Length: 194
Image (tube, rainbow, N blue to C red; front, side, top):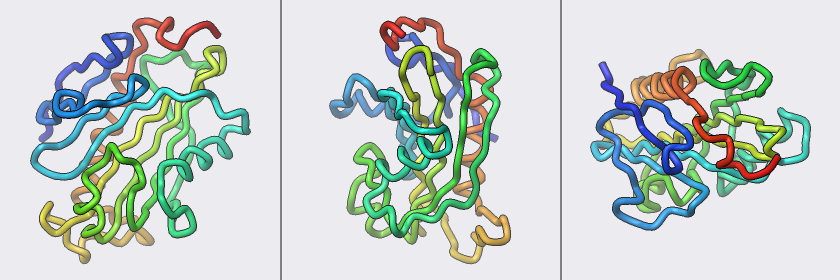
């Protein structure tokens, strides 16, 4: 069972619980001020929190817009499901949406390094978008899950058409559920004037 630790993000303006083994990437390389990135030191899974200007599109279109921005080759991305989500500690009037997609590579430079991504069979992408309308902000939470044999991935474990996610994606879904349960905005001033 995964152990979690309360984790302050953006100087404590946001808090959530992350796997206790995940490392803050900013301790080893520079990360943009609008991002927080955590990496599994025992694998290649990464968790990214990204504060972006709100995309002025309907919610589902905005979710797909952000996905296209994350991946290198959007023509090869497959979305396996999407829908609304409940964030336990965020006001109920704030809308949140999530999707599961797969891509041959993840274009986000904050995920595992390029050599590892090129060796992966595919990358699972768990994208959550929190629509902060008053703050004119979209908060993205992206869990990138490269599927490499070195991480214990076996092609026979995964059949997304039949709802078989395999251990790497199932573990990432557990991380995502914990984030949805614990994500809390402590200082709304982080997002500037709404």
